[in-house]
Length: 519
Image (cartoon, rainbow, N blue to C red; front, side, top):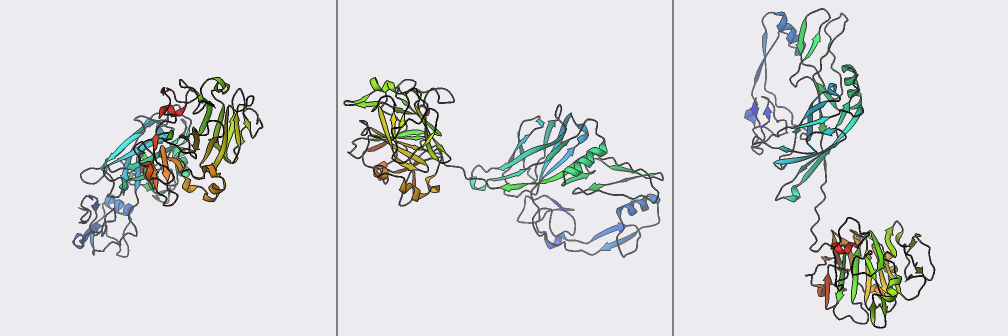
């Protein structure tokens, strides 16, 4: 036997039988590799080759001289396709149910462009001994070192247990060459009192791709009914059964299986491209006009939350995300009528039928002059007036000026109309997948001149409606070059940059404080 001699695959070290035109990986062999082979077999008619059982019987019986038959060199036909990547699993002994087991995992037929190390992630209901992360390493000869997976079924119910396996090939300097394979072997945990025959019958019946073999340091011993003993190699591949006839006389034949081995086809899946890091990740931000004109607001506050909480403005430990304060004749008044707003007054979130608002306050709210009731979500409509609170008019009044498939725009229609407006979008939602015609129908003239903003990859983006180019919003972005954004405009990574106290909160949920404090 010779190693693979294909000059295009110098790392292939698969052994090639003399006369074979391709190796096990499908690499073509040079013409000089095919040589004539002389095989010595028992003297049989030249019409056909003897079976291995007849050859062994002839040698054991001490029959006369053997004849040598020389076969002419024959070029093996080229394979229709290369060998598929497979995960060979061997050494599984179902008789060790309830105890500690170790199975051997080997990679076969892997492409040569794999990374030198392939990570394996394992998840199963069985109790894995060494965690769920392992690694296959490629040797200098080109093959892969096996991995031993140890597990225990002690205390588990008998039956079938899936083993979810993922193989990841990642190149450090070539992310485009990353590849991923998956497979799902099934491990049978038999009953404690199950016999060996029951175990193998159940395993063959449930796993059609099982291969029972005795070539891993084990020999199946067949006892002849008429006496005597013959050692042979029995293999049952692809859920078939190896049948051996040793004579016309009937009798019981005992087959001793060592372990169970089989091949799992590796299914390659597409690896989604890794998203680029946003230069300024934030779930809440603000566009600040240095000198706003009569048609613009000084602050355009941006929110990208699954559930945006509207509530009272508090500099210290606020309970809401979108903070509101009453505006009087002399500007913002954080006391007085502002105290008639609850810390958590209303919720705006996206539902299956668009965006909706829900009253969760003590003082109530009016939608177009009607109180909807507490904890009763109401879909937002274009032009809807939202008045906080229900008992006192004029504290805070908002109007829905744009109802987009990926967001909603609110303008103040009270004394704070020049101070701020609100742009609420769904997180990680691309407006390119929305209906443009629906956007045009659900926008009032007041919001028609506003830029197209959305949230993706953890941050806010601006999309040019003419060229379709996306630009990430960050403090260093030249906003004057973007369509729809005026001069003297800056981006702040906080929704309320004018607040004096931006106290960071601690905790996983924003029930006590808003999410923008984490920005």
